[in-house]
Length: 65
Image 1 (cartoon, one colour):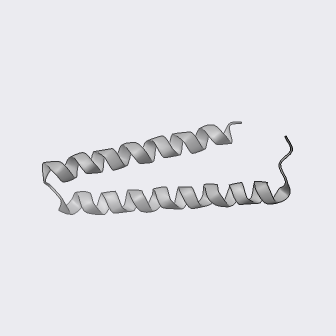
Image 2 (cartoon, rainbow, N blue to C red):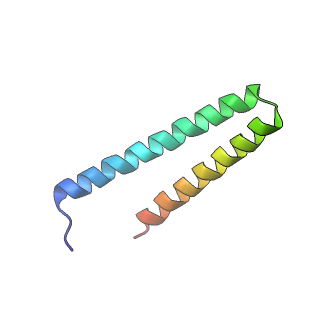
């Protein structure tokens, strides 16, 4: 199946957006970590960091194709 130029450009824009969202997500979790010491928050921040790692790994794997 052949991708059109528009599809390639749209995919590239989505990848950029996803990286930007991951970066914003990382910034938010770092800011929250500085202020939130409750166990529930700590667990949630760990969860956010795992999601960020998985997202970045998936994007990197897509770049390898």
